[in-house]
Structure formats: C-alpha cells, structure tokens
Amino acid sequence: MLGVISQVLIAGALIGFLTWIYFNTVENLNQRGIPTGFGFLNQVAPFKVGFSPFLDFELGVSSYWRVFFIGVQNTIFVSILGIIAATILGFLVGIMRLSPNWIVSRTAMVYIEILRNIPLLLQILFWNFAVFLPSLPLPKASMTFLDTIFLNNRGLYIPKIIAENQTSGLIIIAFIVAAIIGTFFLRKWAKQRHDLTGKRFPVYITGFFGIIAAGFIGIVVTGFPLSLELPRLGRFNLAGGIEFPLPLFSLWFALTTYTSAFIAENVRGGIQSVAKGQTEASSALGLKRGHTLNLVVIPQAMRVIIPPTISQYLNLTKNSSLAVAVAFEELFAIWSGISLNQTGQALVIIAMTFLVYQILSIIISGGANYYNKRSQIVGR
Image 1 (cartoon, rainbow, N blue to C red):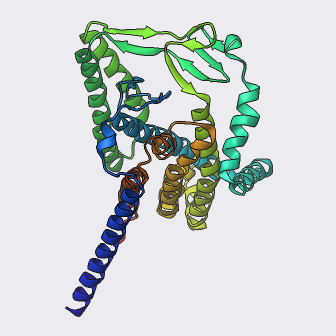
Image 2 (tube, rainbow, N blue to C red; image 1 turned 45 degrees about the horizontal axis):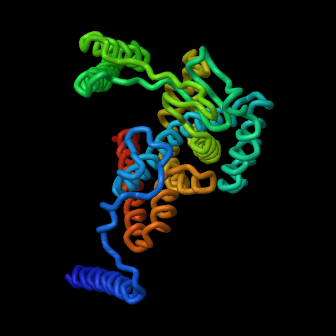
Image 3 (cartoon, one colour; image 1 turned 180 degrees about the vertical axis):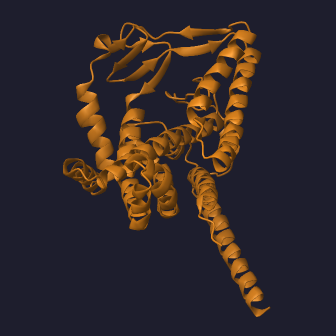
C-alpha cells in the first residue's frame, strides 16, 4: 500500500511540475507579446510545399493544418522506405560478413566499418552535394527510359496514374486490399500444409502475382477508368507525372546505407549465436548452405536480431529530421522550421512535433515487439 501511495504522490508531483512549466511559459510569452494557442492552425500558410505524394497543397488556400499533415506524411513516407531498404540491405551485408569467401567478407566488413563511423549528417550532405547533384545531368539533358521515366539533378519523374472518378479508384483499391488480405490467409494455410506434409508452397510469389491480378480485375470491372499523365520537358524543367525530388533520394539513400551497417552487425551477431551443431546437423541431413541458412539458422537467430534492430528502426525514423540539411520537406523542416519562423508559435509547434515523433516511436516499437514475440522459440 505504501508503494502505491508513493507512486501516486510522485506522479502527482510530476504532473504539477509540468503544469507549472506550461502556464509559466505561456505567461512569459504573453508578456512579450507572443500569444500562444491553436488558432493559427486554420490560417493560410504563406509558403509553398513542393513534395506531397498523397495530400494536395494549394498556395494561398491551404492552411497550417495541411502543412502539418504533409510534414507527418513525408516523415512516415521516407521512414517506411528507409526501414524496408535498410532491413533488406542489412541482412544481405550481415550474411556476406560471415561468408567463407575472403573477398566477400572483407568487403562487407569495410562497408560496415566505414558507414558506422561517419556521422549521418555528413553522409547525407556527401551523397546529395558531392555525388548525386554533380553526377546527374541537367533537366534538358535528362536520362530517360522509353520517354516516360526521367532522371536528372532535380529528381526522378515517373508517370502518374489518374482515375476518372473517385468511386472507380476506390473499387480498384478494394480489390488490391482484398488480395493482400488473402495473401495473409494463404501464408497461414501454407504453414499448416508444410507442418503436415513437409511440402513448401511459394506464398510470396503467388501473393505478388495475385495482387497484380486483383488490380487488373478491378480495372476491368470498372471499365478501364485509369489514364497516365506522362512527365514532359518544359522550358526549364519537367512538368506532369510524379516527381521524387533529389533531396528525398539523397536522404533515403543515406538513411538506408547508414542504418543497414548497424543492422548487418545485428544479423552477424544473431547468426553467430546459433549453436554450430545446428549447422552441422543440417549438413549431415544433406541440406545445402542456402537451405540451412533460410530454414535452420535465420529462424533461430531472429530472437537475437530483432530486439536491437527495433532500436535501429526508431533511430532511422528520428534521424529523418536531418532532412533539413538538404531541404527535404519533412515534419521538422516545414513544421518546426518554416512554420515556426512564420508564426512564432514555438510552444505549440515544438510540442506537436514531440508528440508526432513519440507516437511514431510507440507504433514502430509496438509492431516490432509484437513480431518479436511471435518469432520467439516456444520452450517446454
């Protein structure tokens, strides 16, 4: 009982202290003529947001609310791309690090040691200003593929899919979502089948083509309502289609390579934690090295790989705030940077930024921990 009372008192004291700081800060800001509140969120943002893959932004019309949501969207977008790419690359490099081939293992070691020991901010600046920007051509001399995809020192331009009406687009998306859900059920069935018969089923390949087929069926059912908007070279730059700006690619590339070096070490440590007898037993059964790695070693190593890798996912998400160095419009750059300078609402804007990063961290950590729990070896 005494322990509960002490915890309640400590929690109350902490809440009271934070409340005092809040009201004291508000009072000091008001004394200096800096009003604080959420009213500015409905005001029109007097600046342009260049990159927004899903939310539209109209200069002179869109409010600060839209700027905030675009910043959150861009942060999530680059974080998801980085987590996926860093995981794949990290596993590949980690396995290479343990290769019996001397050249392959030493190449992986050099990759890991160089990227882990150079500050991420410096790597972002290096890839953007020293490699990609001077190496890629100007817009008028863009590298092109079939006159539909263009690459230059301003970014990558690809065709944009446009639906004739919103209903048709939602129907096509519903077909694709149904195929994705069906793939999960297919994976569950394939696992049960494997446990009973020992036969493996190509779940991921089947699911991939199933999703493509479902999308095509949706297009046919809705009467082919889609059209392509192709990028075209204008007087100074390309217009139309979807633009992925160079700062986005530079940031994604640096986040991926930097984080993958740490994940690779997690993979190496996880694989080395598996008893050598497991590998010897699988070899005695006639399994090839690839099958041994995929079916015996990796499943057991995951319980060691996942916990430290969760931290790397969180670091990658928070490190995306370094995008301000290359002027990519993620949350920190356009919200805690441009919007704060325009409005002066430091307390509200910084608090909202804190809250977003905290929520993203909880979501990533919760999802990864759930997967970690599912992948643990069940003991007797």
